[in-house]
Amino acid sequence: MKSTLGTTSGLVRLGYLIQETYSEVGRACDLTVAQAQLLCTLADRPHRMAELTGLLGLERSSLTGLVDRATQRGFVVRSSQPDDRRAVVVTLTPEGAKAADTFHDLLTERLEALLADLPAAERDRFVKTMSRVVADAPAVFHD
Amino acid sequence: MKSTLGTTSGLVRLGYLIQETYSEVGRACDLTVAQAQLLCTLADRPHRMAELTGLLGLERSSLTGLVDRATQRGFVVRSSQPDDRRAVVVTLTPEGAKAADTFHDLLTERLEALLADLPAAERDRFVKTMSRVVADAPAVFHD
DNA sequence: TATTGTTATACTCTATAACTATA
DNA sequence: TATAGTTATAGAGTATAACAATA
Image 1 (cartoon, rainbow over the protein chains, first blue to last red):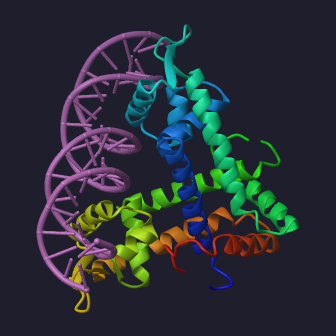
Image 2: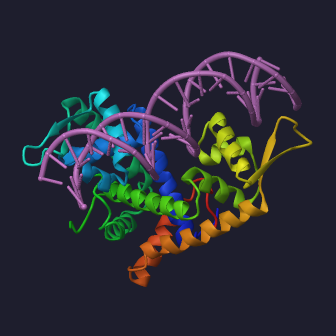
């Protein structure tokens, strides 16, 4: 076990760990990664389709299918807006909110465990630096 | 912009940033994320299918398809092992090695840029802590 | 019997291009 | 004309289950 990895290698492997955790928690909640991202984003508040494409980094047509499947599963509903009748607003159903909550709590537990072995001071520094690094990243998750 | 994010929210957004970067670099190199992961893993050395399923976190049948497509594109070759004729060894072709190199270099550049704005001391601490956290993660990337 | 890998099948995810409705 | 969203289509990725070959 090498004592020090390079920046890239560290980031790639950390990304892998996070992705794996996200995926495993999703599986435990019977959610795909894409579905979990959608629900977590909507947990904050409803969004229009156009906003969601930006937040999730998807093409409009990809999002249509994702929202279709989430609707079929009873997690979200589409509604229209009076002021712009082209727009479609996506909102969590109570079931969707519950699924998002369950996923959120389990993910929190699993991700915090990744840092659990660090000394408290080092962990705090790490989290603080991380906050700086991701300051401009889309808000696809909320504490 | 909140000054401090929680551990989970920070990790999720960092994972998102890394994944986005990985995906964008892949697109620039005409590689899907899965293909890039395969090539980067094989850049270290050839691996048997069974090893790759562990490193990449895939089912055997999923890996079969991934290696099929990488073979069709001329990036890898399958060969057999004398000592265990059930095993299949996957090796990069020169083209595959070149694609892996190009991807590696661009990804390194893009990921290092994520930390470029940090003060040197803070960046060093961050990378060091990250190394500890990912110490046991699969070696899907090498500096 | 257990392990290695493939095949068959089905579903999710994603993109591009063409289309409809509204602004 | 431009924007919001959907539909049609195609390909990649993934999993489960059944299978063949080898250990």
